Image 1 (tube, rainbow, N blue to C red):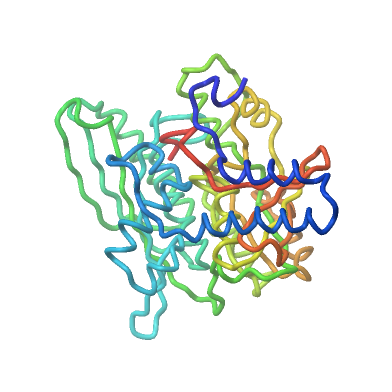
Image 2: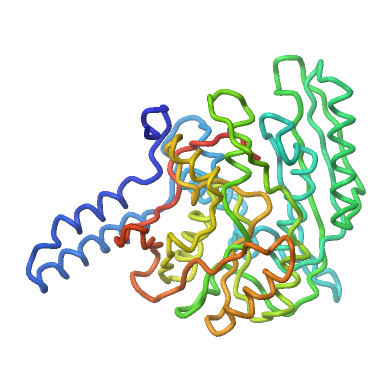
Length: 389
């Protein structure tokens, strides 16, 4: 069964065609084959160099998936209107100077459906997601805001349950919820409960973590098995006749990130693998740094339940959102120290080195498959898993 069988969009388009074109030409004499390969890479470069624009006349679910449509929307609409040096970094949190202090500031909104799922709910997700965005900038999270948009008729007991979950998550992450807002919309004009948060943390480390910092020779790590959250939420909707013993990985990452940064101060970048999954983050790194990222498929940690459900749904776990996992890029000589620092903690016990950074072909992510081949891992196209965060 494929994603097309389920009415879901493909996850790659022109990049797959480019690889197929290169494979068709593999029989050509050496010099001619290399020329055709360069033509394919040039074609990819031209496609990526085009000025982003939103072709659709109306917003679609794909614009919120974290993939190509999201990046086009951000670049062509929001960045074009609000452009400034800090925003142009497109990081998880903005770095701001207030007197002698360096602060990290972030905001996020949560529309997950269903509101309650194995391993978490929208309340825990809202707090942990905000804490994690601050942690990925190297900050120590301090305070969080919470704004609720509630639909008329929403059960008060469900709201109490969500708020209690937020309070517990904030206590576990050692942050305080210090301000908020509440709005109510008419019945049928919302979907129960949406939450918007903002967070502030202190940047007390010298290094500035950024997707543009990657260098050839660097190592790429993930902090644990990927895809748990997205597949769990998808199955919790009850629309598919699939049963799996699986829970969301929703969790705060600030302590694990701090342990890594303590062990490897030269860490280049941290990103939590939410919308668009690990594949999207790696594409952002490759594009921002002008490098290539080569991933070993066999090294990527994926639970059998996630792998199996993904195969049935036609979804690659590399594109599935996590809410308690991050991707790290560290200097190659520090890879073992980084891995040891992560595995020394229970929440990083299954961390793995999944790939490396090389210099060619710049701007691309390549996957060495379990079958011995290599394919391009393009940025997510469409939205196979809508509303998972």
